[in-house]
Image 1 (cartoon, rainbow, N blue to C red):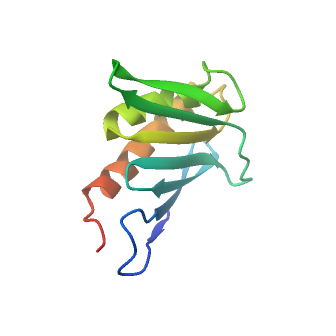
Image 2: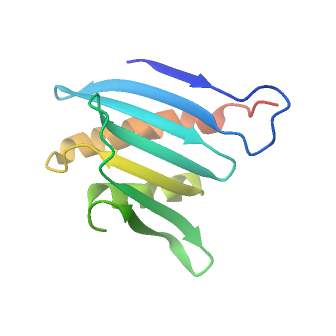
Length: 132
């Protein structure tokens, strides 16, 4: 399991992007992740070491509903695992979430493990002080 991060140089505008990566192995599947933390949103990619980008879903809160709304921007339908996961992450983070979930949809236990790992990473990111 490896992680890393980089940030914009001191004096950068408030809209800078912070990058975080992680790798882990779940049930013999090597999972890689990339999180781009921006001012009011997150771009998250999870997939295998092959690095495919099969789907992209977006989820965000609106003033009209207590649950985040979501829709697929690229790839599979709205009932794909990434769409539901983007909704849950958006609710936890209280921010807009773009999620590319490029892992096998036929492994629900992998989905749960990956979502748990993402929650750990995001908790560290949101608890870290914002660089000046």
